Every structure is written in structure tokens, then in C-alpha cells.
Length: 288
Image (tube, rainbow, N blue to C red; front, top):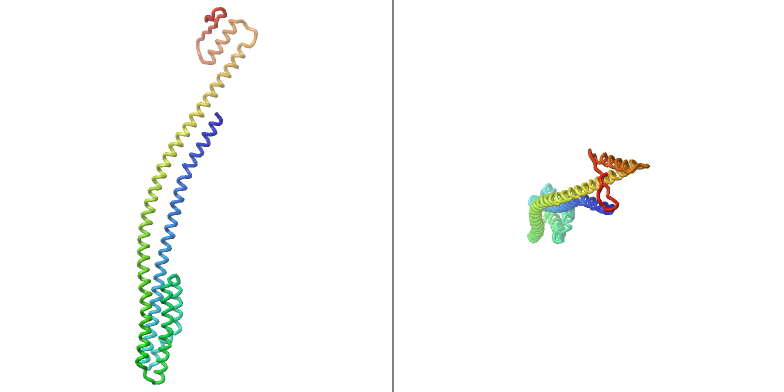
């Protein structure tokens, strides 16, 4: 009986553990999935922000190219040194701006190649521009060949800039769509998983609680049965002890029978009692 009771207690504890642990495990898995999806969306948002920074920087570089070309053209047409200010300023900033742009596209070999090509073309255009400025300062006419050469170099630079912009805009659109689709997928997935997890927890939890209640009622009934059995055994033992005290001594048969009958009637709460004895000779019952 003790071994069975220990088994019941172990089974009861295991059932309680499953009832409490299973919802926690499911909720932990759901939370981990939510965190993973959140990190994925954050990464996609960072990629969109990265494309925005690249577009902003390449637009700045494009403006520097335009200012430099416009300043040089104005100086060549008028000879006024004031027009050279944008050209002079760009000499110190274009290389730095291209370096920043190269750092922003460091994860794209195609874009890096385009930025490097822009850098080489810019340096070549700068050499041609300085030569044309020197000729203008000396009063020499600017050759048509040099003008066409400078325009061809700047057109090549613009082509590289446009290629960078087109690729980044296409990448940004694709990433934005991925963010949108991933957000919708994450929303529906988390909603469905949350409902499914809640329904599963409710179903399993109800079944576990029903089993838990049944086990508890069974254990309680078993404990009550054992308690009743012990009480009955104690009542019997107490009656035996009382009966032994009543007949202890040297009494006659009738007095012993009277004491036994009186004790039994008092113990069981009876008002009237009759005692029969088995005869020694023929086994008949005789009234005492």
C-alpha cells in the first residue's frame, strides 16, 4: 500500500508539472519566434535605411560634379575668377564624398567598381579642367578637342552616377516590398500561432486539469478509505480491550455472559441484546 501511495504521489507530481510547464514551454517558443521575426524585420529596415543613405550621398556627389563643371564653364566663358569658386571648392570635397560613398556600398562589388571608376574619371577630368583653366589664364583659346574631351569625361561620370542611383533605387524598392510582405506575413503568422497556441494550451490544460482533478479525487477517496479502515480497526481494538477488562477475574458463566452482552450492547449502541452459545454435545445454539 505504501509503494502504491508513493507511485500515486509521483504520478500526481508529474501531472502537476506537465500542467504548469507545457504552457510555459509553448509561450517561450512563441516568444522566441516573435523575437526572431522582429530581428529579421529590423534587418530589412536597416537595409532600406542603408539604400536611403547611399542615394543621399550619391546625390551630393552628383551636385559637386555639377557645381564644378558649371564653375569651370562660367570661368572659361567670362574670365571672371568668381566663377571658379565652386570648381576650387569641389577639388577638396569630391574625393572625400566619393570615399564616403564607397564606404556605404562596401557590400556591393558592382557599386564599388562604379565608384572607383568615377574616382578615376574625376581625376582625369580634373587634370583636363586645370589645363583648360591655365590656358584661359594665359589668354590662349580653348581647343575644341579639349572641350569635347572634358564633356565626354563628365558624361561618363554622369553615366556612372545614374547607374549607381538606378541600382540603389531598384534595391530600395525591392527591400521596401520585402519589408511590407514580411511585416504582413509576420503579423498573420504571429496571430495564427498565438490563436493556435492559446487553443492548444486551453485544450491540453483542460484535459490536464480534468486528469488532475480525477487523480486528486481518487487520492482523496483512497485516503478517506484508509482513514475509515483505520478508524474501524481502532474501534474494534478498543472494543476488544474493553471486553477483556469487563470479563477479567473469577466470574460465573452467567455473570460473564451478562458482562459480555452488556459491553457489546453498550459498544454498538444497542438497547437490547441476546447472547447465544454453541452447545458442546450437539452444536446447538443455547440462550444464555
